[in-house]
Image (tube, rainbow, N blue to C red; front, top):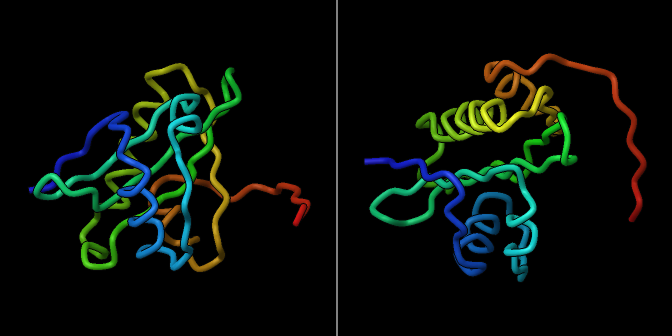
Length: 128
């Protein structure tokens, strides 16, 4: 059975492993400082194993930002990402955010629209 946990603080090894299998980006990062400043983060656990994750960063005011939505490939296409984003939306609203932003690759447009996001115009500068 899948369990969603609010602010679970998974270990760096767990989170790096999930991001690697979900996105193919090897990382060796300690997320403790990032997550401690986030408005919220949600972990999806199956048999006590981290299989999904989303971070809700914020500006300290009314704007929150969905980041790092990840689901283990073996668990994809089961609605886990949708549940994570909907729970992140609920928690962000409950914690005082008035706006929830997300940036995503074009191939994820349908997913985020199904989660309730509307298209907007925005600006972007690539720094690296």
